[in-house]
Image 1 (cartoon, rainbow, N blue to C red):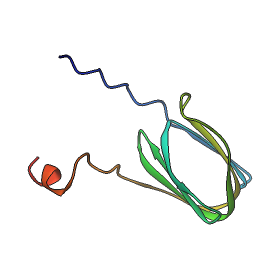
Image 2: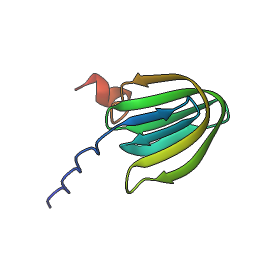
Image 3: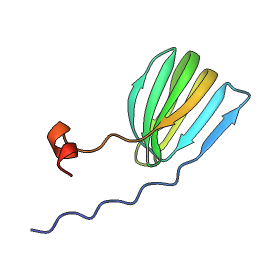
Length: 92
């Protein structure tokens, strides 16, 4: 059996307007979204957002685009988690 070819990651960009409107492209999935924070998995790692009154306005995972509003105080990237559990990562 052949494995399905992995899709290349979508281009990833951030557009922040007046610290109140954020467009993120290259979104693969939303890990969480609350009024104070959000976490989006992108092809470049996990994007952590912090602020107040954060709200997801639109989400199109096929196109890889999310639009959020609120007051954005912090944007930070962390590395995407390795696939598999503890032993899988340990024995790599």
